[in-house]
Length: 224
Length: 243
Image (cartoon, rainbow over all chains, first blue to last red; front, side, top):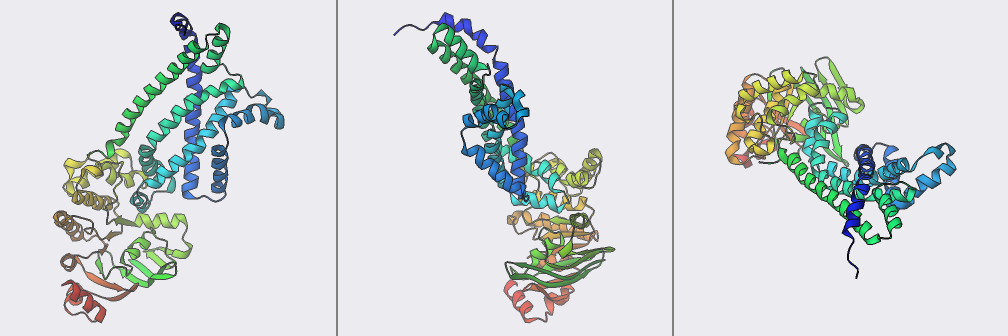
């Protein structure tokens, strides 16, 4: 066994960290878009809005039923061949679209379950005072569902951050892509990949901490 | 005046309301009694469209709604004319006591938030819960929650308050404070339709008592008459079991 080259690791750390904003940017934008889309799909499913409900079921089934990598390749390499106007779709955009759709499908089901978990009495009270379905959802049901769904959604965000590493297969130089390049130049594969693993790990640990704080804040309404 | 004509409701072919006719005068306090499963709660819930009735009409003065063809605008108008007090309180879990009372004023009736909260604060003082304004429902006792529920109904300034077994879910120690508040609201000649199993309370506050059986109003009259000289054998039997 040869000793680890810590000096090398220290020297590429700042190089890799330069790509962290891109990784976190892709993850954050995808997460925000996925939150919006998944809430919409969940509400369509809960209120059983005709036609849209059927479309939502197919959407969820497809994006949960196929590998993320296949979806990313489909968007980046496949779609521009069919829709020629999409040739300008760069790797980052394709990754964001793919990640958004993929995680929306999972998150929609979690949010739907959380919405259905809100006590029946909350729906009835909101309707009885004359709230529209939209007001009821926005003011009463979704905030309560959010408390239930929050831990799961943070888990999906963690998964999403790690999944941005797949964008390197679309030619995007993000955290993983940058590491791959460094490793290919130095041949110090172990040092490079253990370092990038540690970077992902630290980010996830920070998020887990935020998750705990978030849960405490959202739980204040039920605390005695 | 509030008029209900031929109100019907079935669940899976089971008739729960079998043609209800009911006129309610302004300021009248009506108590509905009867065995479980005779459609008492369903009657209240259809009047607020928490359950969609199958047939009949509901009128509030000039507003007349054919329930089978009610539009969502009709339903909203009807709900603005009525307020509901639930058996299980049904306070918004993500709103404080004060916000629970203000919510409808602000969101549905278009009050400014500041005005709605001020009105809610006045009501909190009327129901004796000023010190709980910022408490979330989970931090209130059952009796306190139900008092906020009644306060929410008071805030609506509705033509008709529908009250569905307000004390049935309460521990015995909280029943009295809720009945007292109900009595206070009734004393202000608020039009109310109340389902309850508290016969003493019914006798005290009702202008008229309705006895329901099998989805129909079988007998009605002033409480002295209903409780002391009932005519219908089913009512006699019901009262014998209770008293």
